[in-house]
Image (cartoon, rainbow, N blue to C red; front, side, top):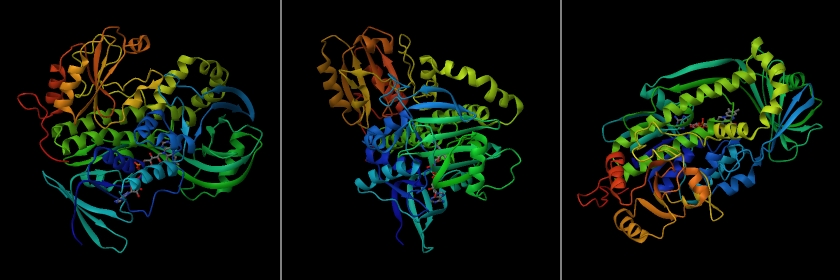
Length: 533
Ligand SMILES: Cc1cc2nc3c(=O)[nH]c(=O)nc-3n(C[C@H](O)[C@H](O)[C@H](O)COP(=O)(O)OP(=O)(O)OC[C@H]3O[C@@H](n4cnc5c(N)ncnc54)[C@H](O)[C@@H]3O)c2cc1C
């Protein structure tokens, strides 16, 4: 078979690999994506899609379809002993913080389908039944052997390889990266079912039980729910060996609710692991998604985090391949995403232990201390806002990373390394103006100064790289940024702030592009790409 040559070999077409492929389409990067299975997953698996993921989907024009096909988790209803203890409205929990101020329930199978269809609609295809067997790398590229259905081996040569090949990642093993952490002792179950019971379908139901929490997530379709819970410690069946009858008995015992399960779409049992790699890359090979970090299902972070790893890596790799950035920018992928993976494993572990831990103290908090306070605590908007920021991933920042240039951000509330805050301009989300796969330079001002000159210079010098916009400094915008004086914000292509300044010229921009991004600028400072993509 003839060798395939490409810029990037993506291994694995789960949500992470498919997202990376979609981003490469945006940036016009050539890639090959291989997957050992025959198609996208038919199983629901992850069901929580958060605001930050929807912001990324919006750039792919997929957010509308995702929200139509999914269900918004509108309320949380706490139950104890089969009775309602309290109810909290979640439908607009993140109002003012994102155009998607809620958690969307949309199965992983549907997310993968959306991403796959985006790929196909742009003339790309996944190589299904193609399993990476081995690979080697040199200073200039990677050579991989991929086996097809008939056992034939195909050689693929690429400039870079990205292992989006899940928790058992061959790529990670071959690179010799560690994957340390722990495994939760108890066995968990998940089931997608139809239920007959007295509660309305508009809420996530959490039953505070003696041994853990049993959660019922409303899914699209009448009486359709995802149920998640745990077997008690010492339950000795291995993963995959449990019959549904056993799970149903457990649900009824723990939840203490009169309910009939009338149909089972899918169920599974699993052990919960918490692990992350010591490094997200080695040479020209990178890891993203579950191949680099796995955590408890608390907060539904897994799929969302993989999508964001891909989003972080895609623009950096694209810019290096196009000659817009120096290769060292690729080191910032590990620099930004490893601390995030570490933080995530810690916070999801804490949330999870509280919900499913089995020692007497956690039982006491869950069944005695928490219930009377829960409704009261959750009624505060400030608590809801904090919870939304944490869970929706909009609060992740890269302030400590080397792409965040802090020299001019002193006077501002927003700092280099923060996600672009969400606000409206003339009734429209600022994110509507961030769809081009480029850097975005904004001047926020009310003056009618000579922005045409600035625009002209940017268009003549940096047209391929930067999109320039002037936005009125409305009072609510001034409040978000913490200043009423005109200022500039440079956003990276993933909509994180690179730097902020109050200067009127382009010198700060040139320094940032040249010294931080490694962008080749001629002595005249004109932008000069060195290679074609
Ligand atoms: C029951 C359950 C519930 C969950 N709930 C949530 C939730 O609510 N929210 C959330 O965000 N996350 C949730 N998760 C986690 C989520 O499913 C994972 O985080 C997500 O699937 C990770 O995506 P990925 O693409 O990184 O890896 P995977 O989905 O594991 O995809 C990896 C792909 O690589 C392929 N592959 C592996 N090796 C090779 C090879 N050598 N060659 C070619 N292909 C290969 C595999 O076949 C697979 O398709 C849940 C998981 C489970 C199991």
